Length: 82
Image (cartoon, rainbow, N blue to C red; front, side, top):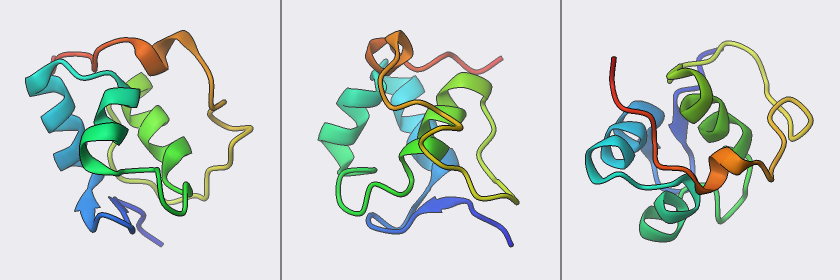
């Protein structure tokens, strides 16, 4: 199984993370601008993991407990590419 995109927006996590990095968007701002993680909300943990680690493709299911919904990072700008 390869999980690499937001199903609701049909956009890859890599593309969403790049947009956030380029525009200096927080996770909350990215969700507001793109709709990612706002419909079915299933990609929320994946986007939070993207922000935290830079990982954009996943082989395991992530749940809210794996990447808590509310954290200081949700309001911080996306980390820049290394």
